[in-house]
Image 1 (cartoon, rainbow, N blue to C red):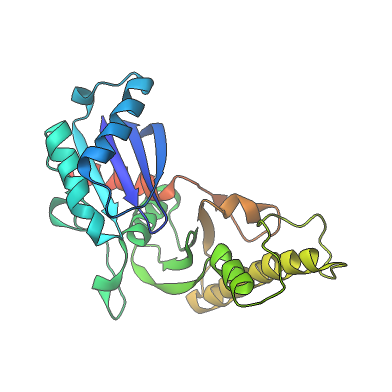
Image 2 (image 1 turned 90 degrees about the vertical axis):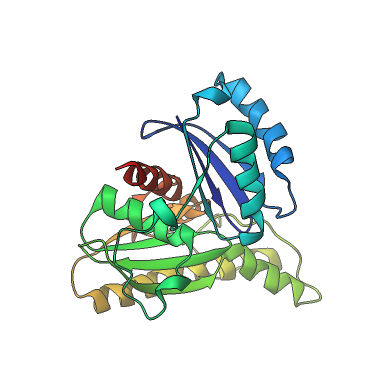
Length: 258
C-alpha cells in the first residue's frame, strides 16, 4: 500500500492507497513544529482503526509547500515505517512534464500534482482551478505541459480581510446565498452576496480570458475543499474532482517505480 500526504499551508491531508484506489483519507492542521513522533501517535491509531498494519505500507510519498515540515515527515517515515520517503518534484519523483514558464522552479508541488493528475485523467487542453488558501488557475496544454496560470486570494482570505479591516462588519460563514439575487436586504446578506457572487464572477472572468488565450476548447477541472461550494453557482466546471492533488501523488509514486 501507498501512504501519501499533501502538506498545504492550512492542512495536511494523508491518504492511504490500495493500488490507485483511495482506501482512507485523514486531515490534520498544518503545524511545522509537529514532530515525527506526534504524527506517528495520530496516524498509527488511524491506521489501526482502518485495520491496516504499518508493515503493509510499502511506499510513502509527500508533497509539501511547507519546507519546515519536511524533516519531521521524513522522521515519521523512516522511524515508524522503515521507509525512505519520496518527495514530489525531487529525485526519483521528479516532474516528468514540461514546465513552460519563466521560473519553472517556482511551481508549487500542489499545483504540479494537479497538472499530473488532470492530464492523466482528462487529457486535452485543460484549465485546473484549485480552491485552497489561495485559488490557483492552471493552463495545461494537450501534451501535458504547464503553460502558466493565475493566483488569487482564497475566498476565506477575502472574507477575513473584509472583516478584519472594517470596524462594524460581522463575521459570517461562507456558504451559497439563498437566492441568486445580488441586491441584499441586510448587512450579512450583502456581505455574503459580495464575497460569493463576486468570487463566481472572478472565476468566470478568468476562465473566459484563459480560454481566449489558449485558442482551443479547454475543459475546466475544479478541485480543493471549496470546489463543491461553487458547483451549483456556475456552469464553467466540466469536472469537480476533490481528490485530484492526492491522486497526482499516487501517479507520481507509480512513475517513480518505473
